[in-house]
Image (cartoon, rainbow, N blue to C red; front, side, top):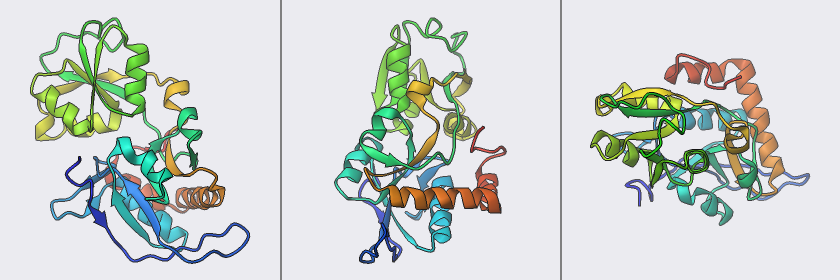
Length: 257
């Protein structure tokens, strides 16, 4: 279990759900992995930080509610949402398969996948042929695992509970390459623990696997809350708050085209 898997960052909240009639007031609980920097991570003092956390708080402010964040291992996030542990999960790639299980907002960011390798690697490119016979690391239960297993059949695809685990194994020489989001890998390579490695290149996303982008997942059928989030995302894009948060973490518009 992730070190922060049972950590709950509480902020007292009140949220009124409405589906044409007023429901009892309750907390709006947002689930996050807490281990996917720069989008979400645990600070040294145990608090949560990152683009997702700042944006989540801004969305709640726009909706005139406050939020409670809870950390959840990524591969168990959808089952936890379905079980009612959260009202929403931040940072879930929108795919047709997942859309059968949860309700999605529209995207709030979109970046291409990429592959990183050790600096001394002789791998010439990012194609399946280039990676044939190589050990390719991915985070389990992600679109990257699905993409690697479907497109890189000549590679040994090794799945890890977290992206950090995969990156650590590559730094320690146990992987030939790793596939993840381009921003995740780029930010890691800037840090001391990423000095081992280099970005091999970005990949062309497969819409059937990667979907239209990353959104917020809600319990299936909760279209009212999805509409509220969508309106808030649009408002932050229009009023400049999204750009303010974006520019804190990225030198480009992470929302994508």
